[in-house]
Image (tube, rainbow, N blue to C red):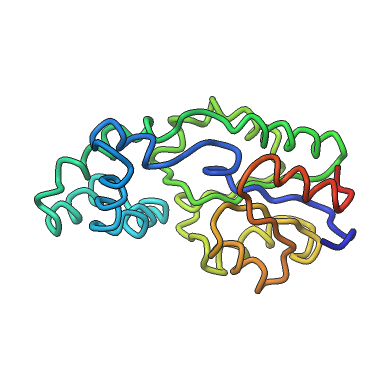
Length: 203
């Protein structure tokens, strides 16, 4: 990670906040293997990405329930109880966020998130008010890892891609950012992120 980094871009769900369908479906299915089987069967992440892109949950539930009628109840459960997929903030990462803020780095958010559900957690996500720019997929109708959403962000910030460090827990998103010239950290834990930041003298 070269020292020319001038700004930091954070993903939200999975990095600053603990989002996972497992948080919700563990109340409906007996074990992780059952949840995995269900998520794979309905191609959950591709389905959910369309809500992140801007499709309403009502339409998403209707479309997918028609394809998987025997899973309709579980599909609807995600829409009805979405808030249960969030268990709170990742305290370690939020701490790093504010340490970087105190160092004077501009901090940006680039997140795949439904515009329909984001208002449910906006007040809880205290870090949002301290981000200089926030781009949500559901609001702009663009989605990671497609390059267009990265270009959308770059048009709204003064830095070039090469001057930004992009932090995300999704490897496809990381790979897409790298192709566009961003410096990256594939997030796996707050401890691992802290180590990377210290190694490169950003903290």
